[in-house]
Image (cartoon, rainbow, N blue to C red; front, side, top):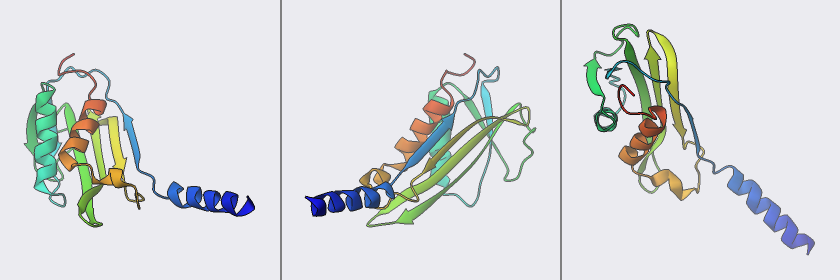
Length: 144
């Protein structure tokens, strides 16, 4: 009996390190239907394409800004970062999208599977995860 309890405890301890974390602070209502995105050349171009598609599907117009553009270049500006890892297959291990309104942070979405270990949920398609983050970050449609 004691050895079963010890094995179960050890298994729970091991699995607790296989966590995927996602945290989203949604953007409050935006008057602007345009979201300017500061391009990040250190992230795969497919991330920006997926982010832009997800915003367009919510009714937003997207304007791409050069990397390092000012946060006040547009009324609503966004930055992003992401990275991928290999574990039997490539997967998006981390993503962060920050939205600024008039230069002040208005919302943030973070997805972190860097400690995903044996959690197979980390193999979700990047575009699907980006769309999920955008849907949570921008809960209404453009101008609503």
